[in-house]
Length: 374
Image 1: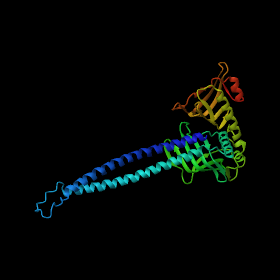
Image 2 (image 1 turned 60 degrees about the horizontal axis):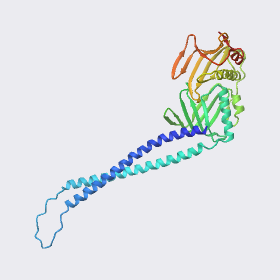
Image 3 (image 1 turned 90 degrees about the vertical axis):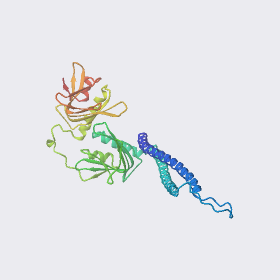
């Protein structure tokens, strides 16, 4: 993971350093032209001074002769003096700016070397276990858009030197966050987890901005707070109290509790991973299950390199089995599909995602019989 961090940091520093180096090159060229101009004006001024000065007398007894007219006018001589003064002043200013730019280049090179050495340091075992548990909890809750690249320290103030990759909701954009510190706060009453990053930068689409003074917040709503506090007691700080258990009769028909939601997401992932598709699809979120239909299902797709390329969301979805033809499909209704950079609406009879390589028997077993027969 540290290699990804190093590559991103190196790329950001490289872009800034190249721009600074090009500016320094232009300043050096200006210095060269300025020096040549000073030499030229100095030579012209010396020649003009000789022509303006009267010749020395050859003898005290020599008869006075009328002084010849100067070959260079005094106004031209004054103009040369002024041009030389301005050229020297401009050269001094450009030289000072060039020296400043060279110092900045040296400072950035030292910073890049320092960050590279830091990025290549191994993650402490305790910190690695913390990040692994954090990933596990987030994935169990259906959040797949955040991936921690690393951190170097964990204490009562949170994680330090944290690096995070954020994927856009459509799966087609990526942002990089580097922060000196990250805290995790859980609001027990609402099941809201907030990861807040301090003292760092966030880069997205060639736009690099410093994090706000009060921190950059990444919020996860509707999580199983008890699971986070149980698995990450050294990181997550809970606030408030948990609400009383809800009356099962008052729950929305088909709504899944956190444990059931994780179980069905795992079953859907098992089914999708068995399909021989050009890209790897996985279930990111599901809200409920009623009459063999999943409610508010979200999918994300990635290429063989693990880069997110596609996404889909549907208000309803079902696993459709055609026993006679031996075909299994995941059918999506009322939603949006992002595929190959094109966004399209899923309406009418829905969108059928055929799952080659998955047999009807495999689908029925994975879904515990929650399938629709064609």
